[in-house]
Amino acid sequence: MNPDNDPRPWQVETSEYIHQLPWFTVRKDAIRMENGGSIPNYFVFEYPDWINVVAVTTEDQLVLIRQYRHGIAGVHYELCAGVVDPGEEPLVAAQRELLEETGFGGGHWQPLMTLSANPGTHANLTHAFLATGVEVKQAQHLENTEEITVHVVSRERAIEIINNGEMMQALHLAPLLKYLNRD
Image 1 (cartoon, rainbow, N blue to C red):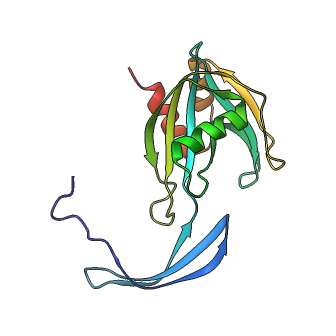
Image 2 (cartoon, rainbow, N blue to C red):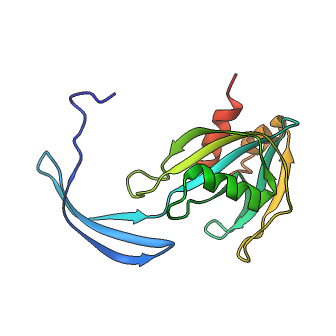
């Protein structure tokens, strides 16, 4: 739905990169709004698209992971997640990440939802998938910068994890809650 009175997209008058690294790219735009307002220094973070997976085993258990996150200096439960490589389809990235991080694969895959970490400042999207009927296919195949433990939990335990604040990543909570709230 796009009502006639919706705000219009902003016009970019100038745009320049302030910093460009694979994991930290910042663009500065000068913006002109339809109402005449302007923002001379609007900063946008450009990341590759991300994926995450609500993975459900053949025994109706959820596959979660735990890893240290330096930004908040803590270890919490998460969904399997990762980066979409250049030229890679999000579904392929999701299947690859689940297999690498957890050893689980196979099953039936479908898109669950698409999210933005912060639509005001982030240019990328997170593609969440639901994978049902997954099974262990191999051992974990982690990069040397990954320290991940795999936890297969019941639906009830997943709800406890959420209610106890043991999962902090909002981009993981949203698709997990959507799955748990299905009929």
